[in-house]
Amino acid sequence: MKASLGLRAGLLSLLLLGLLLGVWHLATLTPTPVAAAAAPALTPEQLEYAKLMGKDPAAGAAGAATPSQKAGFPTLVQMGAVVAKNLASPFYDNGPNDKGVGLQLGYSLGRVALGYLLAALVAIPLGFVIGMSPLLHRALDPFIQVLKPISPLAWMPLALYTIKDSAVSGIFVIFICSIWPMLINTAFGVASVRKEWLNVARTLEVSPLRKAFEVILPAAAPTILTGMRISMGIAWLVIVAAEMLVGGTGIGYFVWNEWNNLSLPNVIFAILTIGVVGMLLDLMFARLQKAVTYVD
Amino acid sequence: MSTEFLKVEGLGKTYPGAGEPVFDGVNFDIAQGEFVCIIGHSGCGKTTILNVLAGLESASTGHVFMDRREVAGPSLERGVVFQGHALMPWLTVRRNIAFAVRSKWPEWTKAQVGEHVEKYVQLVGLASAIDKKPSALSGGMKQRVGIARAFAIQPRMLLLDEPFGALDALTRGTIQDELLRICAETHQTVFMITHDVDEAILLADRILLMSNGPQARVAEIVKNTMSRDPAKGRQRATLHHDPQYYRIRNHLVDFLVARSKDLSHGRAPAQPLEVSPGLAPEPAPEPSPNVVPLRHVA
Image 1 (cartoon, one colour):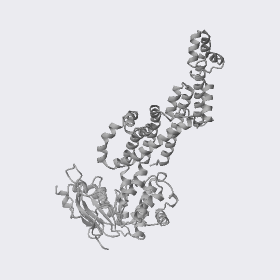
Image 2 (image 1 turned 180 degrees about the horizontal axis):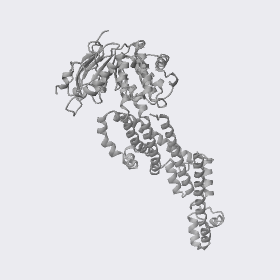
Image 3 (image 1 turned 90 degrees about the horizontal axis):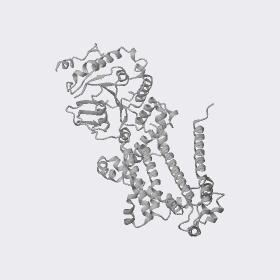
Image 4 (image 1 turned 90 degrees about the vertical axis):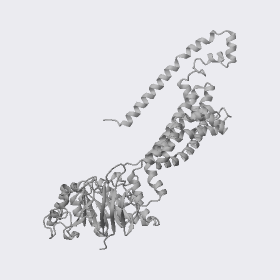
């Protein structure tokens, strides 16, 4: 009797997760006695200084039995508590530096959606034209090849100077990084539509518009969707970095802000959230891709 | 029968970079309702000629006239069945054919289109597969869809580029029978490329024999002297019982095996002569005397 591949893979995944959490647990348990033992050996001046810095040794000693230093790497229990707290109220808003992680994600997703949509609106029609016209392809190729490898964040100073608005600059950075894979894939997909399908359209005297929408678009759709999927992946990578630079709102800013608060559990939670949301976005595009893929 | 429904005059094609034309001085015409096959070795430009007739390619020299109007580009009046079926793999059989039908009659309602599509799918016997995608069909079924699509737009002329080349012998036979039946029903004018001598004898009224390239030409036109009526013996099953069949077949095979290569480089006559192998004037299935001297020209 053999369990299905999916089941076995799932079990292995769970095992690996358990292993990972076990290592985490063991690694975070050890340093606490050292901290507790070091506390009493302080001079009054040091105690005073520690109090001024917000680290009350008395409170630290009291909490030594249950290790709860705020700045250290969190244990699994602390992590669990933070996750539960964040998931319990993801949308609270206590002013500019204390917003729920759901709200921050919303800002990020909104920026990504807007920049990405603008990029798609430019890249797909332009890619169509480039794919159809060998002349334009040759003419625009040097520009694309030079602009494509530029890190999107390198545009940031220029964007901030010209646009003079940090939020719009973030959207611009998403726009500029999403445009290339979509543009290149659309052009490639359109240029490699099979000649026989175009000949069918020609012998049927199909109008150019109908040819574009009913022959070329479905024929090139899998390639275009691949480009869109790559673009979305890059956009989600870039938004975190962009928000760290720009600040204000967003999941990237949340990570940076929690780092400044020295709240590592929140940072870890945000990292995990970024991963999960990125995965969901990718899954969404995988679905779309599957829907337009045809078997030849 | 009004001749010169389709007239091909001095057609030639030279590909850029090639010194000699692939073919030149190709002359023939096709009457309304006639089924014409063209046979020749690979590389003599058969597909190019068909593409020129379809309007998909332009010739270097010469002209094609259909109904006294010059063929200048693709048109719905000429339906094409492509070598590799050329169905759109993202559409079902129904929608593949509907695509063609809507191109021809854009003003039709959905119901009209649907009815028309179903009629032609039934004609090729694929009613049960109408909502399948091409990837779920066998090679023979795909080619049938291609034929149904070409017939569905009711073109004045049908161009078939070796439509059964990729099919196995059994499937090919069945579809040949179907094509014969449909053409008999619709009196369709057909121009078809084939490599198969038997297929040509079964289907064609006249068979154009092309000499080898470069500078290939239509060297000879063989009249199929067997009655086209299936009731009088033109069926796949009984074809080989007709004594006439072997006379025609021998003539064609002789041409392809022995004579076609001697007629390359423009040694074939520009105006092909029409022969009727097996009829009284020339009982032996030998090359006609008019052509024999040409073998020794070079």
